[in-house]
Amino acid sequence: MKLYNTLSKKVEEFKTLRETNSENFPVGENPKQVNMYACGVTVYDYTHIGHLRKYVMDDVLVRVLRNAGYDVKHVQNITDVGHLVSDDDEGEDKMEKGARKYGQSAWEVAKKFEDYFFYSMDKMGVLRPTLSCRATEHIQSQLDMVLDLEKKGYTYIIEDDGVYFDTSKLAEYGQLSGHDPRHAPRESRMGEIANKRNPSDFALWKFEKAGENRQMVWPSPWHPRSFPGWHVECSAMSIEHLGPQLDIHTGGIDHIAVHHANEIAQSETYTGKKPFARFWVHHNFLRVDGEKMSKSLGNFFTIDDILQKGFEPAALRLLFLTSHYRSEQNFTLQSLEANQIAWRKLLQAYLLVKKNHHLDAEISQEAEQLAKQFFAFVENDLNTPEALTVVWKVLKSNLSDSDKYHLLLEFDRVLGLGLVSMDESDLTKGNEDLEIKDLSVDLQKLFAEREIARRNKDFVTADRLRAEFEQAGYQLVDQAGTVVIKRKATH
Ligand code: AMP
Ligand code: ZN
Image 1 (cartoon, protein in one colour):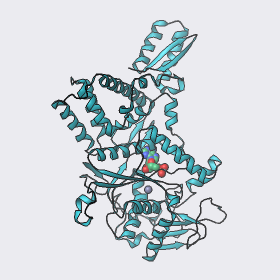
Image 2 (cartoon, helix red, strand yellow):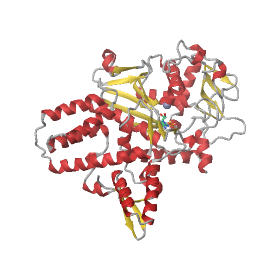
Image 3 (tube, helix red, strand yellow):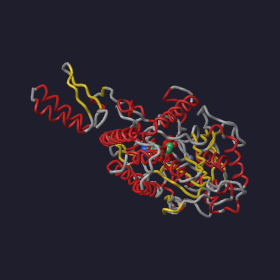
Image 4 (cartoon, helix red, strand yellow):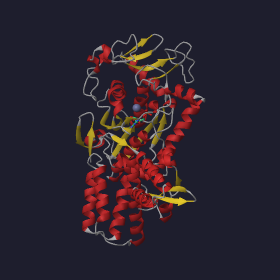
């Protein structure tokens, strides 16, 4: 198994801490245990398709590791306090912002969007983490960590603001991003807190401001109404549940420069062990129509938006798999339409070979070769785009239906498209009427052109345009003066 490690900036052979350092582990412990921590969502708003991409690819990583014989303990947190709007130490807490936006308490908002996160994950076929932990339920271990760092002399207090980590006390800082921001000119950082000793210093614990009247506060030795910083939450929870050294830590690339740099600084100072995480896996971003997608910009689709447009979650999952997790992916409705067609093709082919296969058939050598190719791709830094080419090769091959059935099920254990639970009834699903707005911009234009042709009784053009819809996976049914748009069940 090979994985790109942001720490070394290289694709490395993956080994667990226990595999590399077996003499320091008690006899009987599984050397194949992978302790993996994934930064979770901030539950102040709806989970969007950018998040879906990140957690689908975490899921593929877990599945590939498990398939390769590793026992993965996957801990994922829920950020339900302390993540400020700026990602730094400035601005409002996102939870308090969400509470205002939705007219509910911060606690209600946290519950609502945690539920929506897991609803979205279940739809996408993402396996539940081994453990999901909320920051608000780990206040004591976060406080203990900050007290320890204070005792060791790494902190200072900014009055009416918080407890800060002094990054100048470290020999090294910023290893992940490859540049040490402690040496950056002061003016290069925006929204900086006054009185920080160094631009890269960060808040471990924050105090309620006068008149702020926060909903989420806890007493601490420094302030009666205070709360943890976002970075310390991940360090404290991962160490509490997985120990002082993680095998893998994942997150989006936006976390490299600040959040993860700070996790490393405080965790290694706290435990005295290096490295805090041996493999840092960072996912690139999903854009929508070439734009940066984020909750704050408001240009996001949720899983329900995707379902309402008549697409299936497996089509979206397939779309994610067509791009490597370290590349930026540009989401468009056209690309989703193409993957909806591809998913239907795969499902139809699978159901056919499922019907025809013989359970006791021997697997051919050719099938074994294709399985090897497929797993070599996924175990090479999760090369899912290349792995998918093997899936299509299998469908086009002359292999027996039993071989194909066996291979598709084996591949799907790591792709997670959910073939195993599909049956004939799934082929007729997703055939609801669609609205024009559910189509891509190109198809909307084509639809308008066809309407003009139809009204002008130019049936040759109308039929030609209908054929283009067929090509794109849609059916147009002229009914009582209107046109009903349906997704073609099979293509
Ligand atoms: P947040 O809820 O902002 O704390 O984000 C949770 C995780 O989703 C982080 O690892 C982010 O890097 C990741 N993420 C947020 N937006 C996107 C996006 N548009 N594409 C991919 N990953 C994202
Ligand atoms: Zn985190």
